[in-house]
Length: 66
Length: 149
Image 1 (tube, one colour):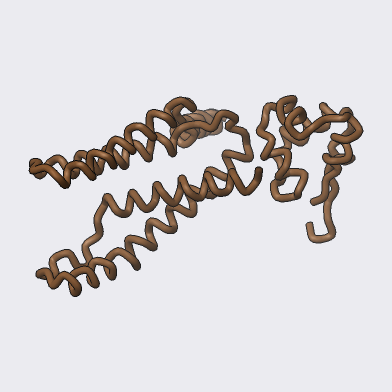
Image 2: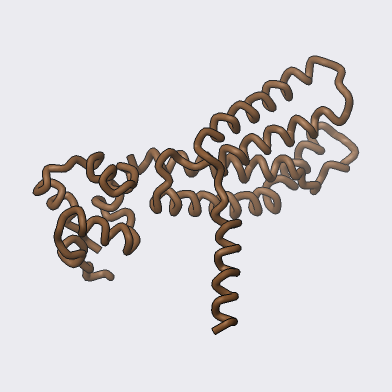
């Protein structure tokens, strides 16, 4: 699965730390999701979509291998 | 319907047990208890103490490590929960492997080297297995937390 969190973060001008505190998670969690090492829960994905004000489908995309 | 709701309460009861954790500040308490245990175990060697002292101090060390292991992180989010469960899984596998494969042979060779009666051979020490499991869990957990910085 691919994601556009880094891009969305740049659009909103947020650091990993700032995004993490907005979502109530640690910076490591944001870093791991951005680097595709961790797939977040539906709850966290929906929270991300709320912060970025776009749909979950615009943040996360299925890969060819999925 | 009744059956369904009773299953639901069972799940909640089980979750209360499986998700049990101590507050973050207990981590410090755990470090103090286990370090005190180690320090007393070392100093004990220089004094003539009764037999019950060693098991009590070993248990103190194990209890301290368990307290550290059960303490929450300052931000205990879903990612930390997944790292934690991975570390428990690994510790469980290592604990069993250590008890079955490593410890008996280690004791066997110690027996040969020290030329004791052979009574220690193939006996598994509860303390060593628990110590192995808890240290593997804590080391793996801390290592993976740092790796994802």
